[in-house]
Image 1 (cartoon, rainbow, N blue to C red):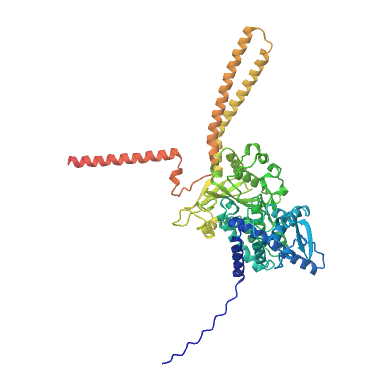
Image 2 (image 1 turned 135 degrees about the vertical axis):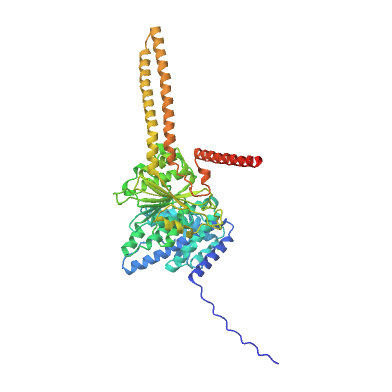
Length: 605
């Protein structure tokens, strides 16, 4: 029996790629090209190169839009970047410069190239030209921003042909399409995460987005307020703040307010500075106000005036580093330390608006700090004394281990304070690890959903297994009351030593020119007795001061452990632990005595 051949099924028409798929494919193919170049060493080199290429394409698309808008309004347009350094001049033509000619045009200070059929001899290379824009614009202008971005940029690619391929790929991105920019912003964030994981100690550039998102959510910046990140890295806090504030826009004036007068940042290192600029541009901020340089190297913090203060500070300042001696002079003599985190904390405190000076309630801050900041004493203790006496430190969120892996496993905390001080109650919230987990890692990072219980608790605070409260005002009052008699005694002893010192000096004057040996010996014996008594008073002053300090300063150890946690026993004060052990010992002795009595009764029977 002859079988009838099956009819061919019609092929399904290929679905067109979505914008996300197209851009993802474009970025993937670009990164594949970059992997072929011998001059690049992993994602730490590849992402910065991709960033500055995209940055130039973005700027040209932005300029084309502004030119069109000016033409529609019948106004002249003055370009930021002149020909032949615009993307459309050297990059957009698919048959444009390539190979060694392209490498020379980009990197050399002086080079020879052709443009519109004319050969330009010994003309500034691209990077040299872009860096020179700082001399052509006002402080904070887009020209200065571009110059700062390219101040630390180097082209590490060795193959000009591969670089040409990258340029052609990036030319396919349309930065005047809101859909493409939105999609690319998410792709860029994922590349930043990959860079953090690959960068080792450069992981400081990146704070996990769930942590950033939580901090922004609870601080809740409002449109019309100024928001600052003085150590902005790749701009995560500013990006999240921008998205948070963008939802509040209702009028063109609101948009202008957000674009021009709301977000501020500063970054000291050239690479994260460039990455932050790109990150903010992709998220919709057309002219990011990010200063380039070390925040701590500015003026003395005591000279920061009300006009320079801000409403909100959100930041994860670097910790574990050391600042140079010259920078320390910007801080009060009794609070000078090389520890970067403590210097930034002082700067943040001074940068917050005071109540009644452009703000009804004053400024507020959310800051990531290492565990050492909580329990540190000495200079650290004095800084915390100022924080708790002049500011309202209302909440400390204790993060689980590994949140900042792989950059560091140092335990970190989120502190929240405002200028409605002094501090009365400090609430602690210990964020638990997900069930079955011992720590976070780069392959299993923290998720925003894990903050859900803390977010729900934030506005309706009650003690529970994760949250507890410390009455700091009471601790302060009790400690000060107990310590003051010792401090008063110390002051009295110091004054007595000073009074004796005056008498010792008077005898010195009497001894000068005295010839009578008997009188001289008598005065010297009297002076020796006075010096002995002076030393006794000085020693008594030191002892009394130490006893008072031992009562007062421990209240500034903020490393409070969860009283409901498994590790609470490890942190019980020694005297309480000994008392508990003695109580248990007495229970054991009593039980043994009862057992012995029962044994004796049975033996008698």
